[in-house]
Image 1 (cartoon, rainbow, N blue to C red):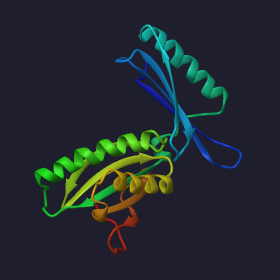
Image 2: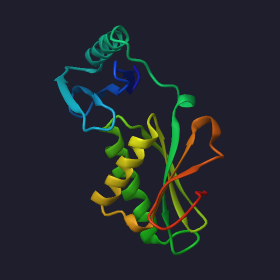
Image 3: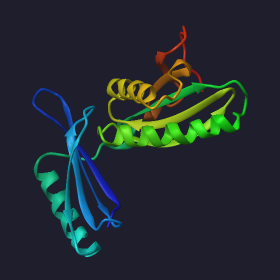
Length: 186
């Protein structure tokens, strides 16, 4: 059984919606999360006796999603959105490494509960912390990252955000900068 499943569908007005499900082994629950992409989702939990029961619910969930017109969005049809924090040192201090963990954890949660994608990885480059997110909607992801940075006290004044199509990851375009800037570079 796959650990989780996330699928998307555009409604008649073109708005993107998502559904996802997973088995929470710790709590013995099958969890469904759904809503409009970019907005706080709704969640339903169902108590299940074991993984086999959860697998049956996952199979039924997959069938229902297909019948309702939901499908996975392949990575190549998504975008890299990078939250970048300016640092005072080339490799980052202990404080910066703490920021990397705190920011990654905050973004994982913030993006997931809004159907906006996943945090793929983070790393340090010259005087920068880069957190790579794979997202189906650039503009909503950029807005959500800005809100998350403010709400989680992630040093918003040092934040820049760049985006590029998954298939053109060399050509990032600046989407937000706390300081005057015309370009975005990793």
